[in-house]
Image (cartoon, one colour):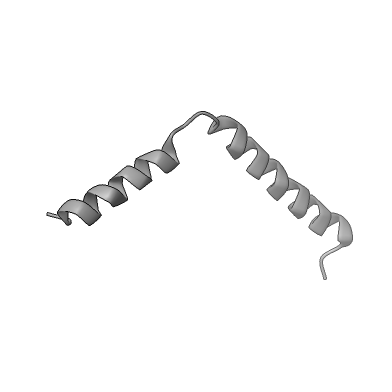
Length: 47
């Protein structure tokens, strides 16, 4: 059975990874790019 310290380390490591990803991706326009891509597909189709 895994110890409490192990699971605490997993949870904290996951939270740290999410914070790091948030920090390095600040200022990117990823959402806008995907939205524009979806609009172009809706208007023109895939071809």
